[in-house]
Amino acid sequence: MRLTTRTNLAMRTLMFCAVNPGRIVRKHEAAESCGASENHLAQVIHLLARKGYLKTQRGRSGGLMLGRPPEAIRVGDVFRSFESVLPFTECTEEKQATCPLAGACRLKCLLSEALEAFYARLDRVTLADLVAGNDELHQLLKVA
Image (cartoon, rainbow, N blue to C red; front, side):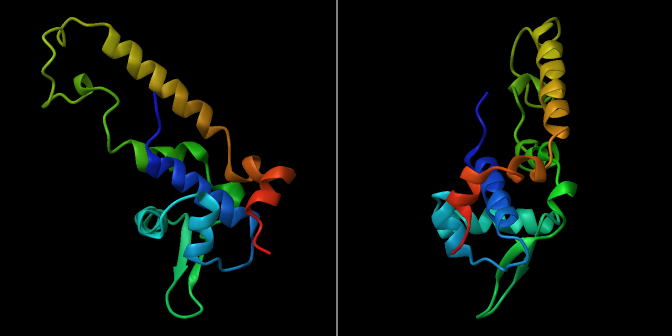
């Protein structure tokens, strides 16, 4: 399994904002810190804001900040927001399934259970858990 770049950038952006609490950070600061282009990051920020994870402010003094406390942002929810739009396998898409084994294959059920376990584990972790006491992360992401 490999995460999409968008999910990876979403988590980096949220951690960046969490390390810089009470401050409106600029998109270019987040992009530089996250190792992403501003254009690519803009798409991620848009979805994070639509889901309420970020607040954005337009204009000269604009930027972004967390839309809710880091303790209220579950990693599993963020992953679902970005990853659930893509099926894990093509056989989980009933309309798109082309596998000749789809009707008898037990692997589909196994993969579904494994994916549920993956998300259940991520649901136990909040953004606060990822950044609290993580001095190395703070050094990397803190805006001077």
